[in-house]
Image (tube, rainbow, N blue to C red; front, side):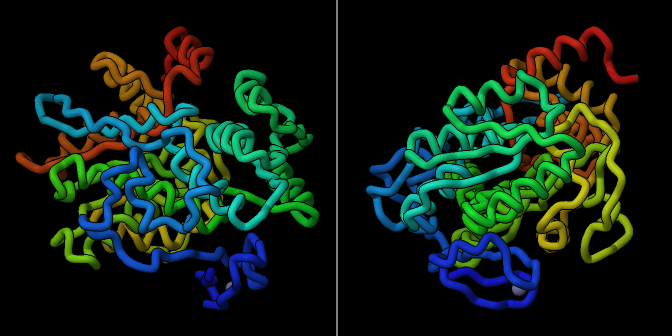
Length: 376
Ligand SMILES: [Zn+2]
């Protein structure tokens, strides 16, 4: 069963509608909030939490061992911080958690063909999981997308369709193609955030079944924020934790519709004109579930914050110097750690967890050029 987040209409999952007739996004919810006793100790990675995932049959599970990533403690300005190394998932980003969940569910529902629009981590992850599932995958990308970004997608055997015009034109082309196929957009998909939420279950388990006090998350569409919120809400509902961690959603100043709405007290983000940012993975002008992301952050007592290009780059350099080689998008957490520590918003003795979303190995060309010409 899926429920529309806007008009509350309920539809059968087998209908394969990717959004409600009212234009709202569909949501799926776990039949039972996760309890410690439900963890499958005989499973590895994210499938330890299968009782909280939408996939019911083991035979339709499409997995490459995603999840189960290390939680590493390191010092940041002399303060201990827990880094969750989700860039170690199979295709190099946390998106594999969501895609494993989505593609498994689609296989279960008998879907044979999907379309998606993403030239980034989501596209390469979807291509890889569809390859294993035997689902035909067509990915729409803007015709200006670099070869470096497309090669991982094409290597998995996905069909790449280059669309002239803007990023929004690419989305329209994918939506049009979805009339005759299934639109597996991770931004609209109701199952994707449930796969993503497993990173937060892992943090809780790795911290000895305790929630951290604060979690720092890069945010474009905000799927990490939604996943984190889903996980800790479940653990709170089942009585496993006594309070929710503060969630900090991090955006680039050059593209910060969530931060702007948060600061102005708006219920949902307003469309903005985005400027180019080195944090391209979170460069989203109109987040599909923006209102839900804002609700999750506000409920947690955290904040949405935005950082300059220079601060993000300095975050990259500092993370790399402690061995954490991430893509520039993920480096925004470094900027936020410096800022939150300097302002005393992260207190002495607090347990702070930081999500590292994507591997620097995916962005070699870009990182080389940033060292040559750092942002002013
Ligand atoms: Zn609706």
